[in-house]
Length: 177
Image (cartoon, rainbow, N blue to C red; front, side, top):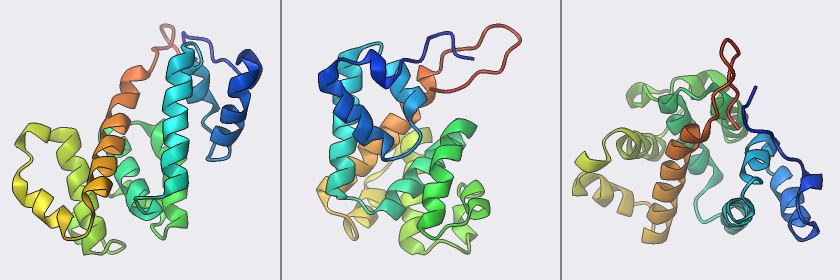
């Protein structure tokens, strides 16, 4: 149980409720949004940005979900994986395949571009300071600079989200917002 209460749609000012409604159309993110709602600028700007990015679909859903699930696995965030692995399954990667994304080199469900996205997700998450020009050259062969920026930002935000967890009271399992 979270040490920070989880707000609901009814706790928001009327003007932000349509954003909540849009946000819930993308999945069961009420816990995360409910924690962000303690600071309305965070709720408003993060969810507006995420909704806008989803509507623009500049990065394919498959590549986005590959990145998000990979980072969630590296973060050991079961909560995050449980939200995004089913979305990746819709994109053609089984939940069993999603569970082993970090072993991407011989992954039978991934093509070479998928493997590059996973490799980049691992690099951004674990070794950003060691990421070299070579991987960007490979990314540029498939993605625009705008897509690389968005993919990098989404990976970085996913990397930070477990840091927003609020520890449970002693002896109770925590739940990520």
